[in-house]
Image 1: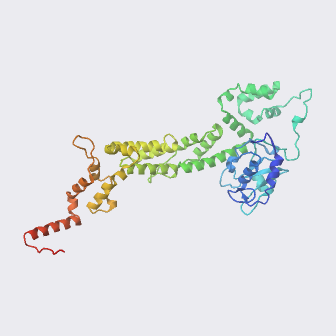
Image 2: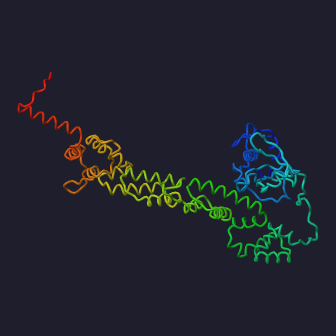
Image 3: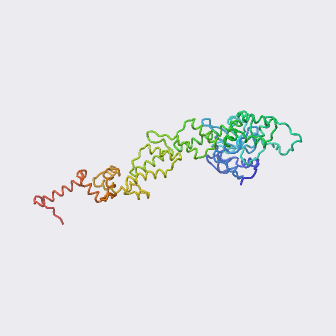
Length: 445
């Protein structure tokens, strides 16, 4: 269980105990090897604080902090790869401008300075993890709660009150309704509780979800972290889209990343959105889960002797990946069509057998009787389909037996072209000549 507060100094000490640990990409051991996000996760885990494993998810944890209020134990995020948007490196702030991190292969866990131009220019965001309390700059910042308020309340300025309310004047100014509210609060010197009571009665508050309010606040109060969060969401969107086989424009990716941040979209909502961007090319699909679903459905249709248009299969695959349907439902639909096409075998199909296996003895018999390659015959052959779907005298399905099927094949013109037919004919002719005394009998025994 996470303690109410973990001193930032304790986090810093635990991190420094890992100094010199080798860098291993994906590593999770503070003794044998870690990468940057692994170092952060494992250090905090020692105090019962569970953080995500990767940098672009860790940047979404906790509260945003400005540079001026940086505290020991805060996480500092950097964008070291300009070819990709979003944070790709993280460290733990130690105080006095220093932070500890696992920089790259060949460099063990080490302490670096935020005043270094390289890191100073690439610092994207600062986050304070819930349950951690540190001193600003690590030099013993004063806790205002240790002081008693003076008997006469000092009148607070607009900026001071805005900060008391957990918002910046920049944010208030971005919302006309809230700007007017702040004016009232300044005039009457409302405390935080009274301000919150008035805030909850505003149209903005009533029509804006909690996650959207937080995102709008971040956008105005900490644009760097806001941009970093959007970039992190975009990285996640790229990964999920590639997995699903969805092809998104840059604008669509930005829209989805923003919806995740502002509206707290869950996996199902993201999946539904991406399902609208599954595109097919001349080779059926562009890949990902959509491609896999399409191929599975296409194979199932073939194996069940069902003729389904490729467009229908594409639509079904898109529905599955989008979350509108499931693979089980689409497979059941194919089996239903097969049961209608081969009523004599409806029970077997319903039990999970496919028509390819059921028809295989007829395929083998036809290939052998007509001396055809196995690859030249399948269950779609008209003779095989007729044998499987033959009706009895009462009109009910009564498939032809294999013996009858073979005899039927031997009465067809195709059989007379076979070597076996010619040998049989030759043998019959020879026997006739023998019976007529026109050919010598072959000695036996």
